[in-house]
Length: 176
Image (cartoon, rainbow, N blue to C red; front, side):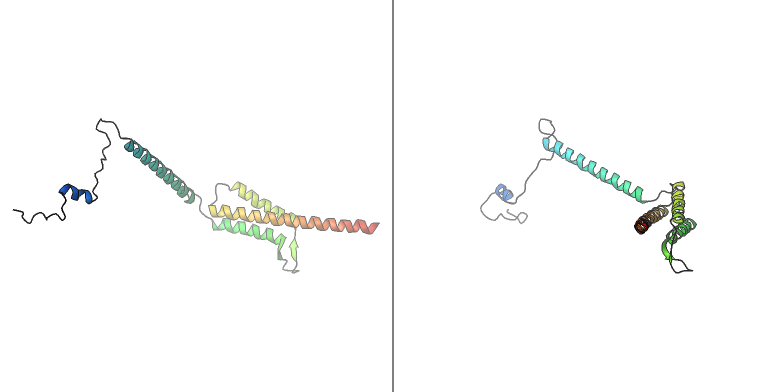
C-alpha cells in the first residue's frame, strides 16, 4: 500500500538526491576532533570572544568614568546664592573701575587701575581660599570672571602705557 502518508517524489531521483537539492548542510560544531584534540576553529572563536568581551569591559569602564566625572559626588558642595552674589558684586565693581560703566555723576567712564587691581586680587584670593569647596558652576563663574577682568585690565594698562609714551614724546619734543 502506497498510502497517503508520504507524498510521492517528483521526478525520477532517489530520496538522497532529493535531500542534496534542498541545500541542507550538516556542520560539525563539536569543540573536539575524533582524536580528542581541540579544534583550531574553536580556539580561534574563543580568542575572538575574549577580545570582544575585553573591549566591552573597557567601554563600560570608560562610560562609568564619564558618568562619575559628569555626576557630582554626593558630598559635592552645593551652590550658594550669597557666594555668587558676592562674586558678581566684586566683578561689577572691578568692571566699573575699568571703565565698563559710566560714572553716574559725570557720565564719563571711570578708570582706576589700582582699584581694579585690588578687586581682581580679592577675587583671586577668594578663588584660592575656596578651592575644592565650590560647586562646579561657582568654580566656572569665578574662573571666567577673573580671566575676563584680568584681560581687560591688561588691555587698559597697555592703552595707558601707550598714551603715556605719546605724551612723554610730545613733552620732550616741545622742550627742544
